[in-house]
Length: 547
Image (cartoon, rainbow, N blue to C red):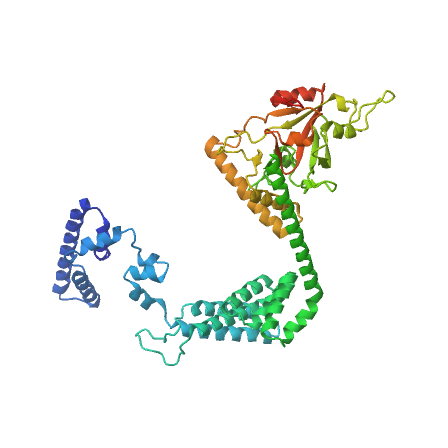
């Protein structure tokens, strides 16, 4: 019988096998008729034989084969790209297209949604009262209450507004009210606010916040939902959000005792939180203005800015074997200096840049907060590494054991970045050009956030954005080079004559300033590390006054 009744499903098979299927089905029908005749001819037929005979008769009547054109229509429907089987329909429109909407709707509910909706709400209220009256403080009552309220909300979404409820036979049920759309929204808001109330008893403050917000989407005048939202933010220590919820609730009900009491309790904390936010917004606006000014100056002066990845992993699960791996990947261009180039106080046309001097031979460095663009490199180096007088035998650096760091005996280089052609893939550990003002702003704000200046939430957001950027770079590099280990050659370098001013260096077309931080690599002329550095990094020229 099962084989016979599933005959129509075989229709989607190819036409090549259809003749065999028809032959098999004809044989099956013949066998079933033969079996029925035997059962009917049996004089000792019992009740079971009679039922089986009747079943075979019904199967034969219902399965005599396709009607003319029925098979072709069914195949055409099944092969239609737009056809969706009713079992896989995701909305009412898809179900209607399947032609089975009425059949499925008859199987959907035992009771009308409106009845289940109201009964579930009543059960939730009863469970909540039982929890309140429980002498042993049984929290299971509150959990049951929450489940009933959620169930009520679920069924409320299935109630059609301005439509009477009907039974399975299509008769209107007079005992159930007809809900307007506004009444349904208020009902949904009430049950969600009630669920938040039950969560308050369990101290599930995150759920209290979420359910209160959902309740207010359906009815923004639900004062109880505003109070519960404010209470949730209080317990989550979101002071400003708590104050906003209190203010919104009091706009609706100015005499609400619970909101007034909570407002007095949180007044100082809310005021402080709002003041801190205003300070952050003012500071952010000032930073944006500064970045705009830096970008404008760089465009006018022909200075190129770049960036490096602010994170070294794309997930929290990535293991780092070395705690200093970030520094190695950033090639000493640390992204979190937090400094920006700025105009000098005594001149509106001259700028100063944060600058890093790196000494790889001794694994040391110096940071200069303000290096004026008109200053010669030799003057800055003379301040840090003055030549020794006749009566002096040691430099001022305690780590310079051989007294090699004197201005006249030092070689200064800058790295050459972004040598790729337009559209080339950039290795994730290399410097990337900042293409526009918006990219410069986003990079600087992300670096500050990751440093912790904007709090843990903003740090998390910035980390996610930077990981996404790094993931895209890695994916593009792997697609072209098959592996991240296929790294580009070490970057080339340019030697800088000490008589050059900082502006002359910055305007050189080979110079890219990563992270708003000018970086110079300095070696004692005769140190072995200098020779090793030049073996690894090709020096492509000298930038001097006559270059």
